[in-house]
Length: 94
Image 1 (cartoon, helix red, strand yellow):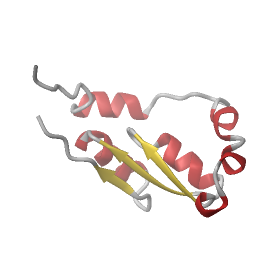
Image 2 (cartoon, rainbow, N blue to C red):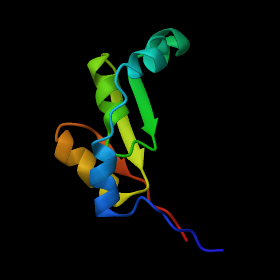
Image 3 (cartoon, one colour):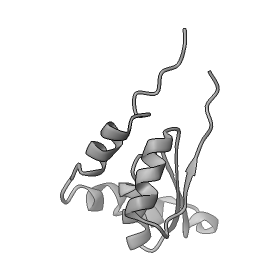
């Protein structure tokens, strides 16, 4: 079976970057700092960051997040939306 990354698509990355989940992030991340051990309280990994929505939100909360994704198009869009953010492409093997 071969792996197909359905997000490896410029049109999909653009559409995904426009999705909004108003007022849901505060619920999901409100207790992040209390859940993490003291040695990790400033850092955060947004695994499967897509276009960086959660990564940007985590930075607004005072974290120093790193966003990673397997889609070059999603990472490119994340950099466009947030040039100062730390976004990294995770290579895949097929």
